[in-house]
Amino acid sequence: MSAEISVRSPSRRPRIKLWPLGSLPLSMGILWAANTGGEALRWLVLGGFASVLMFCLLVSLEAGMVAMIIFEPLRGFLRRAQYLYLTYNPSDPIHIVTPVVTILGFVLVVHRHRLRLFYQSPLAGWVSLLAAIYFVQIFNPLQGGLSVGLSGALFVLIPLLWFYFAQVVKPEFILTAFRLVVVLGFITSLYGLYQLMFGFPAFEQYWIDNTDFYNSISVGKVERALATFSSAEEWGRYVEIGALIAFGFAAQAMNHLRRAGWMVAGGILSLMLLFTGQRTAMFGLILGFLVLVLIGARSWRAALARVLMLLAPALLIGVLAKAPTNDDMLEHGDDERAKALLSHTARGTLNPTKEDSLNERFKNWTMLATDVIPYRPLGMGIGATSVGAWRYGGGENDLPPIDSYFISSILTCGIPTVLLLIWILARATAISWRSYRNAEPASPEARLWRIAATIMPVLILNNMFGNTFTLYSVAPFGWLLVGWVSTWGLARKTDEDAALEFGEREIFEI
Figure (cartoon, rainbow, N blue to C red):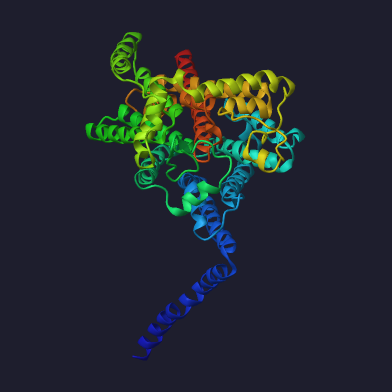
């Protein structure tokens, strides 16, 4: 009897007394932050996010990457949600959360794999050279100061580190990343639809009314939806890639039910893309779909048949569909957001040469090519075209809107750097196409290579007519894909060479 009491009482007593003691620091921290003011609460929340991401990173690199992939599409919403309890402040410390975790992950990877990390795949040496140029350009005095350079590095250099992550994770990780992009693209787009139907919540409208340097929020009288992202461009690019991934899974699915499911997912994301009002993303989706269909042909006759099959409906749409006029787009009021954005997308897709924004873009590029670039052949600094140049640089670099990552890179890092970047992307595209052609047609490997080969040319297009490699949730994924293509394309080639060498030696011995 006494033995039973002595066993039970110690096991129950700590459960009752230790729980409030363990929760006391957290409760006191929250009460202190709430009483101190919103700024303290913001730092407490951001510290919590950073702690969770770092904990996942310490569990494994893959876990940390998954956590950041989930966090990035929500960054814009969390950034705006802080104005539930804060007044507007142009500084956004939330933007340093994932860069800090990324740098920590990079340090851990370099510590484990040493210097071979920088040259172990065909593109690693070239990417390392590009990263070195980006790093040096942080200190370029022409951009207005070190703070401007560091600001630019957050957008350009930090996402590039995901290339090195791709060299050390398991090859199957890219499958996880693909699926996450599709799922998150669908979930975040639901919130975008809510914004279209009911407008922005008060805290988001407050951010829109106060923020600077956001020029693409309006289409006529209608404000574009952002979903959970930081900009409509980011939402459009993310959904575009998600749709192509879903169509790629459908194209390689052996089970009819799975194929139908992936086709539905791709169709829904394509529909969401129409509501983003991003015409460049729409052209990227069209290009990617064409590549996806044509690359699956195993002969030139089959490719020609597929071209003719796709050409017929395209001609029919071109003949029957009428592009909305500018007046048609502007006549929609604030209660017709969806119609206004659909008109905007349709007008830019069906009649792109008549778009004022496209003509203005070419005009700006021409001016930069004649009046700016010749006098800055080696660039003005990695942050010269970023928001930091206006915010911290005092407006020394008074540049027009550029809307092209390649053109921006010429201005920031010089023409040779852009040629290097384009060569890296073109080489990665060639490796992905060749790897898909060498894979077994019905294998899981072929499925991944077909999706990679589809997305790579789209990244090139989107960086020419957009800023894809500076978008928070898209740029890391793009460099992750380039790194995966470089690493595992080499692995396949090495295996094939080894097998061929073994076969020749075996024949010689016989």
